Amino acid sequence: MKIGIMGGTFDPIHIGHLIAAENAREAVGLDEVWFMPTHISPHKPNAPKASPEQRLEMVHLAVADQSFFRAVDYELARGGTSFTADTVNTLCELHPNVSFYYIIGADMVMYLPQWVRIEEIARQISFIGLKRPGYRLRIDELPEWLRPKVQLVAMPLIDISSTEIRKRKQENQTVRYLVNEFVRNYMEANRLYES
Image (tube, rainbow, N blue to C red; front, top):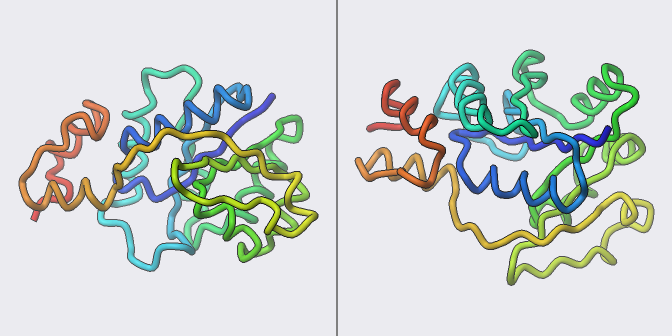
């Protein structure tokens, strides 16, 4: 079984995340994509605005109607800083017969050599790097041992960010069509990201 892991704060999850996951799933022939909200991201110093429970619930709502997508809470349940190496160790221990593929953006591909315990991670899983139009991605600049572990997938330019969605909510602007309708309703019912 081939499973993609889509990690992130998902504060909130938006349609760009879903499009990226579907592109990766289709291109690599993944059986499922698991959306895994981080507890505390090592790459983002600011704490998420929504609680861990709220972020997980929004992920559940966003993927509920897609049989290939699943929300998982490994990193939230573990707590603390969400290091990929710890997550990968847990996943491989719990699911020894699964091939895992971590789905990352083009900007993260070139940053992989700086990841904590990257050699340990790369021994256990592979990466799917999402190529953005206009973004220069040079796999040949990665360490030689890491290159075979990265598969590049073309990604349409979707210029949506969780930061932009939070800003729009603070300014009382619509986020309709930027997030799944169930997520939008949840945000409104819980007054998330409002000023």
